[in-house]
Amino acid sequence: MRTITRHYIGGRFVESHGQGFRDIVNPTTGETIGMGIQGDAEDARAAVAAAKAALPGWSATSLQERGRYLQNIADSLDRHRDELAEVMTEEYGAISAFSGFTIDQARDFFLQAKALLVPETFEERLGDAVVRKVPVGVAALITPWNGSAWFLAMKAAVALASGSTVVMKPSDRSYLQSDAFIRALDEAGLPAGAINLVFGPGSVIGDELTGNPDVDKISFTGSTAVGKRIAANAAQTMKRVTLELGGKGPTVILDDADLAEAVPFALTVGLFNSGQACISGSRILAPRHRLDEVRAALKSGIEQFKVGDPRSADTMVGPMVTSEHYESVQSYIRKGVAEGASVLAGGEGHPDGLAAGSFAKPTILDDVTNDMAVAQEEIFGPVLSLIAYDDDDDAVRIANDSRYGLTAYVATRDEERGRAVADRIQAGRTMVNQFFDDKEAPFGGMKESGVGREFGKFGLEAYLETKTVYSR
Ligand code: NAD
Image (cartoon, rainbow, N blue to C red; front, side, top):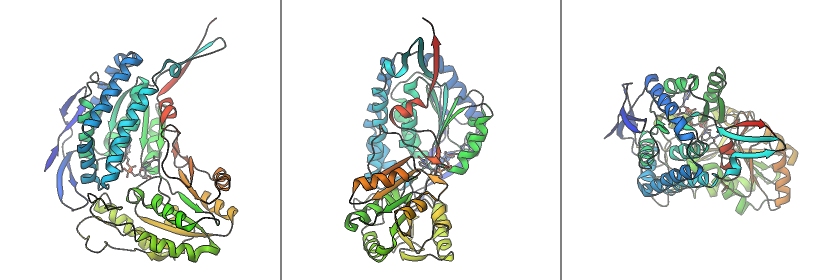
């Protein structure tokens, strides 16, 4: 049993003012493996005060100095890679290959931010005007449970590069992962208060951070419901906000697609991270006249996605993060069937031999229409909906008939045709025949999937204020 009792405030690990604990459960075994402290508003205020006190010093560091610190963090994450990856698999249930990849990317975010530290990023002359980019101030970084180190790193790297100081508030389902992450960052030796981290319930710590007048910026990744509450709170003090919210991504299989490629692609983007991904292609849109072929390919293809112990090299789908989340995924399967969907593969219950943990069956719901809850709401598990369309216009109409607009996918033999369809889809990002992305290109959502963009220079921009000074 591991017990996390301390926050990281002002360059030190400090005991919590808030008392009370939340159990940490291994979703693979269902065993309680630890307890995490539930901080309170006073802990959050202490972290904000430390970040505010550190701001003048940190924002005055030279670009070279800041770059050295970012390099130190990257080196420290590298040294702790195995520990960080193992704890992600243990506490969250992410398959081992994905955990390792996540930590490598977390390191790369710091290296990428370092590369942006050149004078041109921060100053430009336009006629008589000098346009300067200055740090936004104290940034609160609020992150979800589906890849804790990745989200904390993505946000902290550019926030620190901007000269801002940060207060991180990870999910209270990510204690062990966030504790390992902040211990690695501590070794990088940044000035006290530049980085702070507080554990605790979102409603308590989050409300304090989003209402505190000394916080200048909120960068949030999480659900749309919480994002709306944050935006409303933050508006009271006109904080800058970046909101990365939910998704219900369409994967449009165009009628020219080679199903031997398109169906494994659709399953990969749908079941990635055990379906617990905002970027999941959870609605598979297939041409009506090829529906039987698509069905057959999906039914046999999904059998290749082995569910099981996330530490095994051949596992492709791990457990749901908690037993409550498993129940929520089950309720969607029932809701889909009640609304008229049929089960093409998978269905309710645990896969054979996996009753102890929070394992759900990779499932395809067939005969789904886009007005059903399973097509409109985020399930956040390995449950995909198959929806028929008549022609390209109909496919685009269905793809866009969603309150979300995060990531979309198109499968086709003809890249040009794929790009033309992509141009018509309302999504922050549409990927034609590919999944792996470029961390220089912007990431973010349209509609209720969010506000703002992250990654590379777009991510950095979100932590900078623009000042214009005119003089001859
Ligand atoms: P969540 O919204 O429940 O929680 C996210 C974070 O917000 C947690 O740290 C939580 O403690 C905190 N929080 C809760 N109430 C708060 C409040 N009132 N004020 C401030 N913070 C508060 O989301 P989750 O269940 O952790 O993660 C899953 C959700 O995140 C899904 O909807 C998913 O689509 C979304 N997500 C989006 C992206 C993206 O990049 N767009 C990426 C990953 C996850």
